[in-house]
Image (cartoon, rainbow, N blue to C red; front, side, top):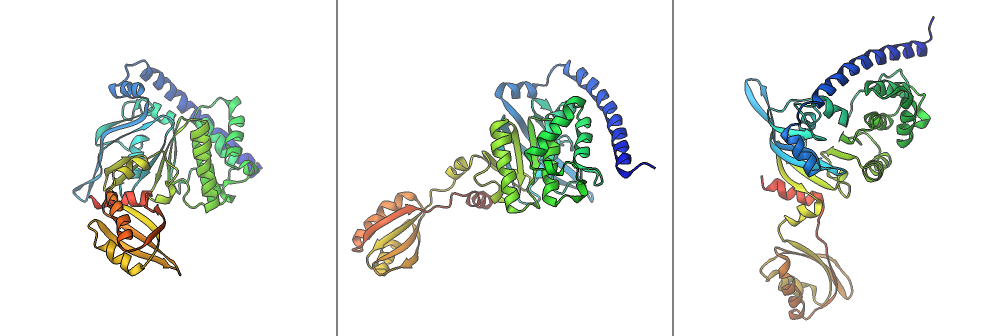
Length: 368
């Protein structure tokens, strides 16, 4: 009687052989499509070096006799080698956009291209260009080893047999899973399975990765390890383009090159954190350490037009620390004059503005 592992190997072999035949048919289809003229959108993308581009992309559903719009006229582009953040609360349309860009959903209207290929016309080439990871996905046969599972996916991607073992060893080492090569995937922790998901998406070495909440269910240490790997190795050294999807702001802070903010299926803003910050009102927050009568200084400052608030942070024997919020940063000079008027002396000060994505998102959410 065959052992379980032999049965598993036999099952894997049959699956691989079957899917290789399917892929060979797909390769013939690719050859036919490649010989045809490229779409206008593809030609534009290659010229502009935009590896992902959407134009007025929309998706509607019919639900209980009503039309529901999940994504509404979304337009943006992602540059080659960019770490691009797709941010929005639950229900903002993030996953729907990703599913359209990865050919899993058909757009209702608008256009999109990935790696120069139209998502409707060139879906096979699009799929060959990408790796996709979603949160809580179940992509593996639990009783097969990590190595056997990756063998299956490598064959599905039509990787030459001689290159499969070295590539598997490479991605397992990259994600710190070499010691789990012969372990059944059902024995892996949740974080290890998620790392294996990313390794699986990389098995065919695609130029583009779509990572939908890839660090979900990971502890802080593992999450930091994976994010550093994405930023420094995959984007920094290998030059891959990564679209990082999350509804958690802390995931994108000091991580993404640019961020698109979505709400209710619409684009609210897109740009680098610095560019988005520049769109904010010219409010300013200063922290001052001042010597003098704290109550008198507070009264003087509050009388200045443009001073939104004065908050006493701490009071010592000789000095008091204040946070002074201004409606316009140009009012700062009047604040300094107020210190002189109040018979005080400025010991030190610094800007204490919250330039985080949290403030940026809050601002654009208020505009809706």
